[in-house]
Length: 314
Ligand code: IPE
Ligand code: IPE
Ligand code: MG
Ligand code: MG
Ligand code: MG
Image 1 (cartoon, helix red, strand yellow):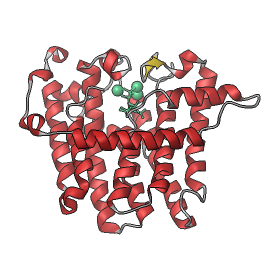
Image 2 (cartoon, protein in one colour):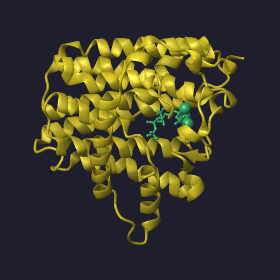
Image 3 (cartoon, protein in one colour):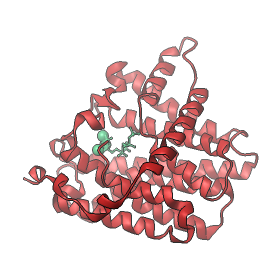
């Protein structure tokens, strides 16, 4: 059975020579800024609806890795956008991502009890509250983007809102989630899996990278480069998520493992096996970093983050 193969015994050269200490420092600094921004933007529990605020805060402040915010900040920095503005966009994508997780875990979807190391929102609260907290996080993302504090230009704010709507909508994350829910029982097909994963996971990574360029007013050539980076990064990210589901631990990932096989999800592991899926992730990471070449050392966080994915345990 594919799941018994131990991928941890592989030691590709890239894993031995890379030193991620600078990346670690940059990620810690990003997390600090993002937590602070989220704290200010998510309502404190109040009024007769305080329960929904409690559930929103419960799900957001549960120790997510804040990877999408880190991408927003790194791409914004690459082109010199103001950090305060980028932090607001980073908060917007993180609350939208958290909504996607709250709904993904519902009994009618993946039916998961553990998320970010804690009981899922519908377990800690109840299903109605989890649905409503997710809805409120989704709408909060747009409220944040459309506020003049995010950018003085209405055109920039509008472009950010449209791009986030596209990434989160039926041709992006929701489209992918729909296909993911319909997949069990179908004969696995790599093209189909790639399409669904680019939508369900890739689209929010696309927005994260592109938004940094939008904030900075970077031109088409730069936007296209970030699009290619994000596209390959996003797919590699979902492949490593699937690998962690197959061979990772609940303790480190903070969520149940072994669910994809149990629920008959179509993943690249179900098609190529563990080693084949890992090779695919490595190829994607190499192609993602190749487009960053013109940026030299200025893009080292983006480059290191992509390689870091391959060894992540959480
Ligand atoms: C989990 O996303 C869902 C996927 C798209 C794979 P993350 O792995 O970024 O989860 P958090 O935000 O750190 O909890
Ligand atoms: C979900 O993919 C991606 C989302 C849009 C939330 P998964 O269902 O594999 O994510 P996990 O493993 O539950 O985090
Ligand atoms: Mg799912
Ligand atoms: Mg899930
Ligand atoms: Mg998963």
